[in-house]
Length: 86
Image 1 (cartoon, rainbow, N blue to C red):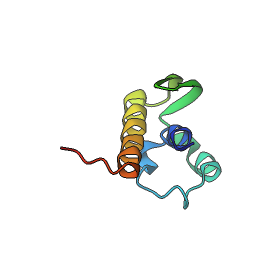
Image 2 (image 1 turned 135 degrees about the vertical axis):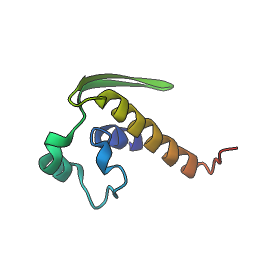
Image 3 (image 1 turned 45 degrees about the horizontal axis):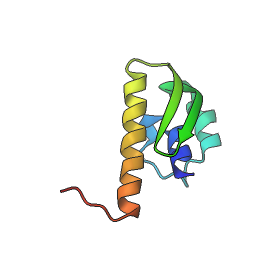
C-alpha cells in the first residue's frame, strides 16, 4: 500500500517533503493539478519489480518522478527495516 501511495504522490515531487497526513491526495490533485510532472496512465506491480506507463507533462518530468518515487520508497523501506547505509 505504501508503494501505491508513493506512486501517486510522486507525480508532485515538489510536495515530497510535506506530510501525507496534512496533504491528502484528493486535495493535492485539486490544488496542484497543474504542477504534476507526469500523468500516470497505468502500472503493473509484480513481486520483485514494477511497470509504469507515464506521460511527461514538464521538462525532465519522468526523471523527477522516478527520483521522487525511488528515493521516497527507499527511505521508507530502510526506516521500516532499520537498514543503514554503509
